[in-house]
Image 1 (cartoon, helix red, strand yellow):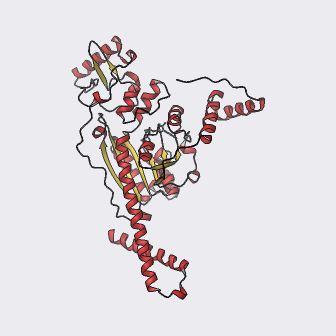
Image 2: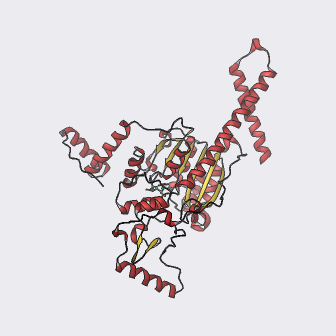
Image 3: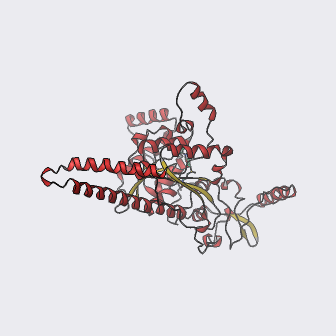
Length: 419
Ligand SMILES: C[S@@+](CC[C@H](N)C(=O)[O-])C[C@H]1O[C@@H](n2cnc3c(N)ncnc32)[C@H](O)[C@@H]1O
């Protein structure tokens, strides 16, 4: 529930606020709210996880589903970006941090260094026309250029500038067939061009939550740093005791979630009409011992994809808290926005425990690679010292330089062997 606070402002502050409102084209109230959130997020002591193992950034952050997953693996979030003001409210309520806004307006060089980049970017087609135009102007175009004007371009330019050790990209399963497969091909070619070793797989949330939700996950590791031999594996799809929808239901959901007679009748008629024409549309009345269909960001409209049967009355839709549980959010996750906004936010989010497992696999792989990297380095350093074993002439700087050069040669020959 939103609270109102009345404040008196000096003329000068008011004048500046009015100017900000004019420049940003946002109402004064909104500028005021943002200013307060910005101030509080800087002033409040941040509770960072004890001894973070790695730093990560949270792009297209939504309400922070990815952030929870990486923090659960003892990561420290050093930057987030999300431009939707309602998502920002939820993010702030849960992480005491106001994400930066439009990612397209953020210089990659201004983003703090990090080990892992996480992004669930919206899926958009790439314009081939733009590429041929540039070619005709005689400019060299790589795949990165081909992605300009899309949000994936922003992910790629940040990877290029910051070179994180690894990244995790999340998207809808259909991105692989989007625009006749072109979108997927360009994404893969761009990541290849950026010199990352890439792994991708479609994973289903139903091993973690009572929801069928397939998403494609793309993980990359910096080849310039680690070479091509990356021992990464997606979490095994082990048969767990599958959760069922009744596990997440509130025994006493408010009546406002029950469908009106009119809407319920409309959904039944609509389904019947489509079935008689041989189309697949139908509302998703769930089996309480089974799982739900995929929760979408449109759930707020009529809720038809997941309906809960009720004895003696029309079915009801899920409450926002039940949607949160359906995505694996804990009950202490705060929902400070309206039902409509909450439905959109959870529908756009991720299955948190699934991403937590994937984040675990990424961080374990990085730990191994970094350990291996150090071992290789120490081994070479010792070998060099043996060779140059002549204490009176020992020049440590030179030794380190030579060890680095030797390591680079070793990696190069490994890469060639792998090619
Ligand atoms: C699929 S959702 C990601 C949800 C997120 N993974 C989560 O767990 O909540 C994509 C998000 O990207 C945000 N977005 C889209 N364009 C943006 C932009 N130009 N700058 C910042 N955020 C943007 C949308 O508002 C939306 O919340």
